[in-house]
Every structure is written in C-alpha cells, then in structure tokens.
Figure (cartoon, rainbow, N blue to C red):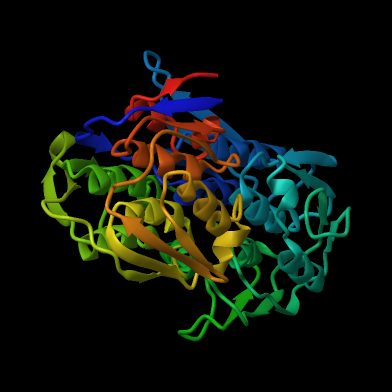
Amino acid sequence: MRARISPHTFSGTVRIPASKSHTIRQLIIASLAGGVSEIIHPLDSLDTQSCAAACRILGATVTEHRDPDTQALVSYTVEGNNGFPKGVRHRLIDVGNSGTTLYLVMAAAGLGNEPFEFTGDEQIQRRSAAPLLEALAGLGMRAESLKDNGCVPIVIQGPWKGGQVSLPCPTSQYLSALLLAAPTAPAGTITDVAIPLLNERPYIEMTLSYLKNQGIPWESPPDFSRFIIPGGASWKPFSGSVPGDFSSAAFPACAAAISGNPVTLLGLDPHDVQGDKFFLEMLAAMGCTVNWEQVPASAGSAEYRVTVSRGGPLRGGSFDLNATPDLLPAAAVTAAFAEGDTALVNAAHARIKETDRIAVMAEELAKLGVSCTELPDGLIVHGKAGSGSGSAVIDSCGDHRIVMAFAAAALSAQAPIEIDGAESAAVTYPGFLELLQADFVS
C-alpha cells in the first residue's frame, strides 16, 4: 500500500497508544501464571495480536474485550496455564512480523515437552535467532533452525534442564526471553547465563521490573554481565493497565520538532522504565521545548501530559543510541531538518531490526536531498534545515518505523511524499498515518 502525505500544519493533542513491549510481556507473564489476569488498555496492533495468538497455541486462554460501539480493544483476560505448555499437540506458531514475540515465546515453548515450530513473514525469515538457539540448546532443550541459518522455521522442544551458557545479546530480547521463562523451569533447575554483550539495557530493566514486582528471585552484578535464575518459582495472576509507548510517541514528537508547531502527548509516564523516553531529551538538546505537566484525569485520578514545541531552529548534535536503537529512524528525519550535522552512533544493532535501518535511512533521505554518511555503527545526517528537494517516493522496505518517520518528515517537506509499504505502520501504531491525514493511493 502507498500512502501520500502533503505538507500541512500539524498540532494539537495526541493520545499515545499503549506500549508494545509492555503489552507483549504482560501477555506472556499472564499466560505463564496460574489463574486469571486482566490486562487493561493493551496495545491493539499486528504484533500484539501475533503474541496473543502464540500464547493461545501454547495453552493459555486469551480473551479480547472490545467496546461494543467503537470496537476498540479495552482489555484482555488471560487464563494462564501455570507454566505452559502442557497437554498441547505439535503446533505451528506464526509470529507475523513480531521479533519480540518470536524470541520471548521461543523460550517459553521450551518449558514443555512437546515440539513447537515457529515461522513468520519475510522479514522474520531473515532475522537470526542463532545466539538464543545456542543458549536454549545449552539449557537442555531441542532448539534448531530447520534451514541451519538461525532463522525460522525454528523448532523448540523441552524440557528445560538448566546449566551454564553464554548468551551475547545484540538484541536485549534474547535475555528477556530467558528472564521470563527460566523462573518457571522445574524446582532445582539453575539457569546460569553469562552475557558478554548487552545492547538495549533499558528493556532488560523493564523485564526485571516484572520479576521484582512479583518477588521472583534472580541474581546479577550491576553491569548485567551474568544472571543466575533458579527454577521453581511461579508467576502470579495480576490486573493492571499498560502504560503508553515512548517508542510510538517519538513519531508525533518528531512531527512537532520538524513542523515547529506544539503537540501535546497524553498517556505517557515520565517515571516508566522505557528507554525510548530518551527521544524527548534528544529533542530538548536539539532546540525544542519539552514541558511535562501532571493534570487531572478520569475518576479523580491524574495523568501526565508532555508538550513538544519549538521557537527557534533545530540544531545538530551527537547521540548515543546503544540503549535505544529503535529511535534511529525518527532521529534521522529530525536531524534532516536541523542545522549542521547530527551523529547517531553506537547502534550497529539497528542494522538487524526489521531492515538495516542505517542503510535504508541513508538511501531514502537522499531522495529528499539530504546526504548522510554511513558508519558501521550509525549514521551522520548532514542536515539541510528543511531545504530538501521536491516530491519523492520512499521505499520503507516494509519497516513500520521507517514508514512513520517519513510520514512525519512529509509535514514540512517541499512537496508531497509517497511511502510504499505504508500498511506496516499498523505493526505498532495503528491510526498514525490517518492522524497525519495520509491519502492511500494504491
């Protein structure tokens, strides 16, 4: 599908959708628990739907509750399988485009004795899980790529026997997978994991916040170079709301920075552990005003709102994205409208996401007259302060974050921008293109 977005004024108030990372973690934890959990205001996207479907295949009962008038997803109730999978037949789990679902559910599948085969879309078929597969095999289970390239189709079969393994984590999702599943391995099992490489540390802190909240034991030095996780624990059922997604908020915030018009974002919590709230710090460093307020909400409660605005020019800078590589597309298009160079560095793992985001952003920004210098681990954007070329057709390569980044860029471009593969925005932010008044031309 191709979307066409014309330059126009964008301002106002935007409610940010729920966090994909939190929603997927809560679905898996609720499925591993014994009893019924309620997940309130979860993200309703293609990726979270893939996770819910995977949890059902592994034996949990996941029920959607939708508003009868709008059909908006209000909540999930999840009846867990107390350490699934149990009593299920060999099944195929299609994770769609969701790498988070693939990695986190792979580990959970190793808790049982039945084999499960994982597959996914074309992008997932190119994303290697080799380090996680090697670690799972070292913990006693069958864990193999049927094409012997680390990619799906992948078969996982327990039991989880524990042991000592090494797990380099170019993506934090490998470690989060073990942290969620290992506590429910059999009593007496010890999962001892050395971590020689760890990117995206804030996502590990997010996962650990769930273990801490439920009193599940684990040991690690402050640098997270090793984790010791005893088996025999149980996840407990819970009820709670999913916080807003700072990863998604980056795109309307980017639009505010580029256009210069104030945009107020609702649904975010500045105290949440999500690393991608760093984007607001980046915008402040580049010349934006970022103002947080706590305001009354429904039923006498309070919530935060944050307003992003700009009175002067955007300035270039240098930013380390090791903890937050998903910000690279939004940061790169913001940098295109800044004065001077912006270096986005220490993010080599941005090349192993849905696409090689470093290469794709450099190639597609060139279509707008913005030159970039590729680095092995990042990108230097030579900003043109908005004086780019005319209309362009952007190839998103089916990457949802590249779609949304260029949609924001279109607001202040010199002419309309068309974006191929626009449907992929629904992976994490359904409705974002409509928010920007996109026309769908094919």
